[in-house]
Image (cartoon, rainbow, N blue to C red):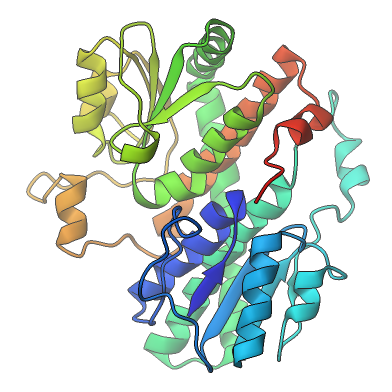
Length: 357
């Protein structure tokens, strides 16, 4: 099983679904960030493979190119898009495309708010890709482990999607109630770093990075005269940590503590998003609490890397993803506040969008 996606669709759609399918034992070529520069030697596409392609517009050239090739060599192509008339949608075969409509009743929804919410460049579609991928994987798991039929699995998918959205709403209600000052301080420091061109570092791992942090970093990079950003402990995109900078650490359980502590010791301000009072909470300058992650049992291994090497995986949705979904929505809201203050419009965001694939 192969995937084709770029940008936020790669983070929130393709990688989310691919990770879950790997956990279920499928033979998946995981879509790495570097896949268009250094190809995985095992990524050969042959007859009877399956390609799952994500693109909000349905016009992303590299995604269409991969779908064309897959069809040519005899693969099924599953297209997931927001544009039913797009080139990608027309390549979906033998099944019709899965189509999200991010603008369904949009005007009616937006008229309820003053000022109008800022949702640039497909944010709604990509958030749907995230919740759909997690919910679809839960339905697939039930088919595989409990032998339910596709009709029953469809009901599971709908039920899990509803629970994910409801949990995100509930968790964020708590966050806005208990962390109002922290969110305002987070926003103020982002504004300060934008105008001073000081580096904003990010520290997150696994699905937390894919679902929430990576897409938020992309938004900051798209702003005209963009932020200087860095991903700690990720060699192609990390920068040195110095005094006067800020490190945004997102870890529901606080297991990203060890890297965050080094950044703190080097003089960086530490802004953290976590679920409860843990070691990360204790060393942070600003903490935003987003419910959703369970406390790590003290007698369990707490080092994130070692947990992965041991084969540790999180629960399937809704329980295992409520923190990430809520944080993804929170970041989109924070970005809207940031864009409003700086004076960024959706047209400005288009100017900052990549124009060469």
